Structures are given as C-alpha cells and as structure tokens.
Image 1 (cartoon, rainbow, N blue to C red):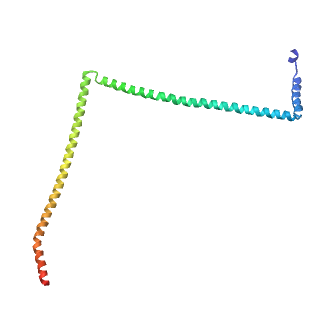
Image 2 (image 1 turned 180 degrees about the horizontal axis):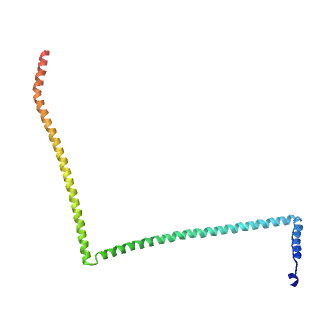
Image 3 (image 1 turned 120 degrees about the vertical axis):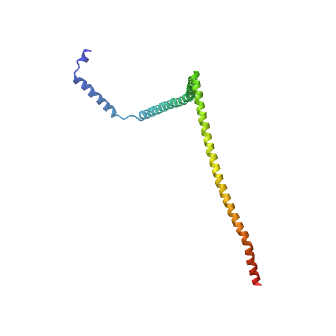
Length: 182
C-alpha cells in the first residue's frame, strides 16, 4: 500500500502509455470470419432489442397520454354539470334573498306596492296616448279620403251635366250632316 502512495508521476505516465500500445496491437489483428459473423449477429440482436424497447416505451407513453386525455374528458364531463348546477343554485338563492329582503317588513312591502301601482299607471297612460294618436291618425286619413271622393263625385256630376246638355246639340249636328249627304 505504501508503494502505491509513493509512485511518481513518471510511473503513472508509463502505465498509461502501455495501454494504448496494447490496443493498437490487438487492432492490427484481423478477426476470423466466424468471429465477424458472431459480432454482426450480436449487433443485430442488440439493435433489434433496442428497437423493441423503444417501441415498448413509445407505446407506454402513448397509452399514458391517451389515458390522460380520456381522463381529462371524463373529468370535464363531471365538472361542467356540477358547476352549472351550483351557479343556478347561487342565482336562485340570491333571487330569493333579494325577494325576502324586499318584502321583509310591511313598510317595504307597501313601498313595493306603490312602485308597482306607479309602474302600472305609467304603462296605462302610455297605452292610452298611443291609442289616441292612432285614432287621430285614422280619423285624419278618413277625412282626407272623404274630401277626395266628394271632389271626384262633384267633378263627375259637373261633367255629367255638361255631357247631358251637349248630347242634344251633338245629335242635331249629326242629323244635319246626314241630311246634307242625302
């Protein structure tokens, strides 16, 4: 053990120098054909083994990823309806709470009744106003049409009287011409 500690750097270098020399000597030898075939077969088995292991790892990874995706979908399928139900419940609870707080005392209930009455009166007044406007519009249209019809009838009467007066005169003219031809 003491000799190992006292080794000089020179002896370490010489040991290292010998190892590459051995490798070079063995590298110079040519392997036999049987050794080459065995080496090639061993390499092929090793490659096949590595390819198989790689394929197995890829399949395991794909299986884990697929399971994760389906797990996520299943989780969402459960969480979405639960969330929707909780949101609906919260809205119902807040609506009921608002209603209870609005009508919790008689003064609050009476104030709400007055509000409803005012809103109803406003809606009634608006409807009455719209009905009056529609009635006025229809009456105006009827008056205009009546005036137009009366004007047309009076024009026809005037034209009819003129035509009635002109018929005997035209008949006399036609008779004169016929007599002049004979």
